[in-house]
Image 1 (spheres, rainbow, N blue to C red):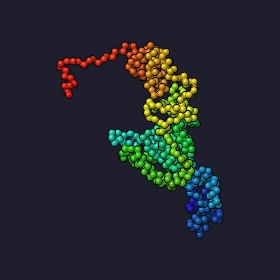
Image 2 (image 1 turned 45 degrees about the vertical axis):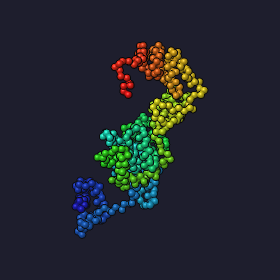
Image 3 (image 1 turned 90 degrees about the vertical axis):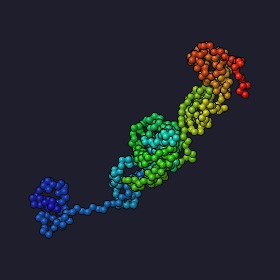
Length: 503
């Protein structure tokens, strides 16, 4: 009030301007004008009447009371509603004005919401639609699994999946990071959530993306097949852009600090034991209340993500690995040291092989051309009779008699060795590769040496490709074979006691 009185004195007694008064009283000229307007409205001049006390002067020059703030809906409720598909601030404002006709206008309504959003942590500023995205990754920290017999340990890798809208998290330990574990982690996560998100956001790991590209990434066929089975799509994060999957990066830190750190002093001897401990702590993490927001991950999941997730298919996805292989002349493809047949017309063609725990499927141009039960017998054959040639001239040229005749042009012994090799097989076709290999040895060692090697193999009854190739590589074909020495007759001597002695 001392400055208010001085402002009145300088204006009405000395006639100074607003700027002069402001410099003298060290206030803004705008403040000077505001005080003078209030004094004029109250009918005050200088000198002040004696009956005007300090309290009365303060009441007369006090600013007009501000109107009571109009009600606003809870901002956290607005954020949750905006995460639902199709919900906009315009729609929420219209619902707000229907309840509060005298409420804020659309511009102020949006401004209050944006100010509130700016107070949150950066990882909450990116909007996520309910049930839309699942961010997946491997944790950087591993957990040792101990062998009780040897006392040695091996690492267990932690798979993580986090939903965007609720941050609801799934974690599971695997003993490998291969395709089978990657697929199993997704299948188990979908089962844990009780539904499937619309978009999967992985890192550029080889189990998810074969070749990273900002515009057209080349997805792993097994991962793409998993997504198609569940009716979802894969949109990988950009290379070296961790902010594209900030949700799972934050979940990795949370799991390492809240789960793995809590288990640091425990010893685990099996994946089942480790996953049971992880699941128990994971439930606690998902139920823990947020520090800066109302609710928890579980509550947001039940409210936002669960209703928006796609339904699970009737049958879960069976993990599969994809490989490429070339069809040999015997119309078989070698997979894990076992041979599987395909239609004979595909000789010399490259096919794709889909491996599961129980089946082996072969594809050409996206079309399945053969399927077999998976066998783990090394060197065995799985042949479908429908794949054998009937009247196709191209394959009929490759008959046992033709191979024997071809080998006979090198020499009689070579023809006999090829015939003996095919006779030792359950089916002559099983010996085609070895016969071709023997014939092609003539290109490297010459016909004469191959004939000599086959002669030596026949004498020793070792008519196989490896034996004949070894004879040539060691040069035994260029030396005369040692004569087999017949055993010497039993000696007769008076000092020999004989078998009867020991009876």
